[in-house]
Image 1 (cartoon, rainbow, N blue to C red):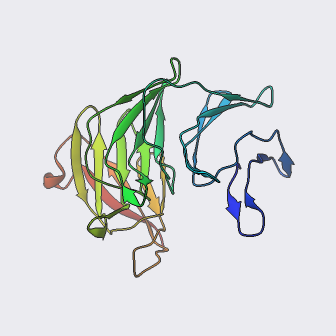
Image 2 (cartoon, one colour):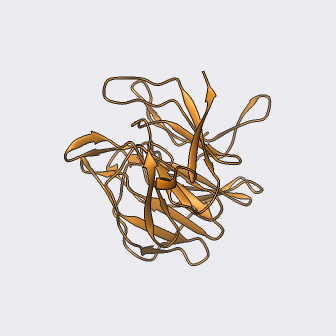
Length: 224
């Protein structure tokens, strides 16, 4: 568990690990919240979020074996953003970042970060989203839910990217939910502008057939 903020203590730069009990590890040189943390083998990549001076990119790498932090020198320009939920997905050596919020506006851009060269490359943009989830399933990005600011709305679609964008289907619109992968994409909780959800469902990806044939993504209720 890294960083965050509170009214009492302000921005945090501390790092903890839970293994039956909590243990504090080395602190980062940058205090931030609303960031993203991505596991990369024996490292933890921390990117984006807000600091006391505003939104930042500032990628840092924490080595779990040496308990040391490294500030990364990056190549390529990417807009600092608040991610509000985990929106970056690691695919091998590449980290993909989609959307988020900057200066009160939702973003629609997709970026690829090469962890070997520390270079950002912008890919094809799509819909504006923040507070969504992004997971990797069979080397394909699946992005669900979230919101946009202009016009103000909650997304009810799941979209995918494997070099091309595709809208997979419509489900209950929600943001700030949790999304994990097992033999499909499992969604739980979240909220809209008027409701807080405690339900969950699984999107079972059966084939590469169209969602219009109703057998590409089949919702299966897994929580009550």
